[in-house]
Image 1 (cartoon, rainbow, N blue to C red):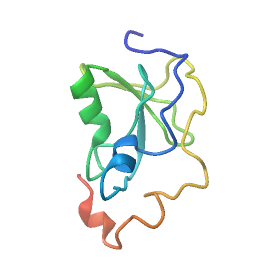
Image 2: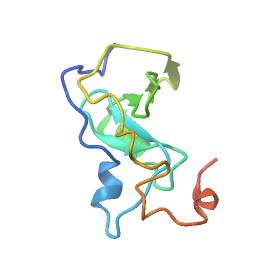
Image 3: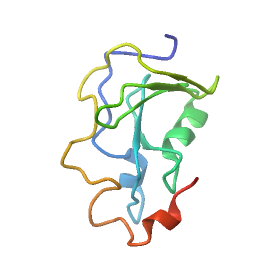
Image 4: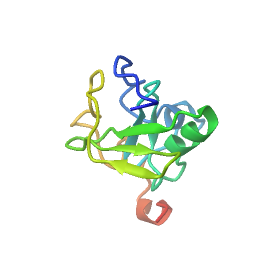
Length: 116
């Protein structure tokens, strides 16, 4: 698949942009750029950093960074692929990481902040 580099590891265990924000943000689910490894938050998350990364860089393919999910999303074509090539590990966020996360930054009314 075009736009995928299987040798690149993920940028971290959480949304790189939420972590770098001041104040630091939180996320619902995580997506991993299949080209450069950038981990961003999903479109349901308040900041939608994975989509912003795809738009800003032209990196069209993302893979879920959630345990048990192996699907890829093509931002250009708006197509879901149930599977794709194996990527450099780790394949998902740590199992101990809270969802939404990270623990301690998620507001009590978090469901009110999700994009539907």
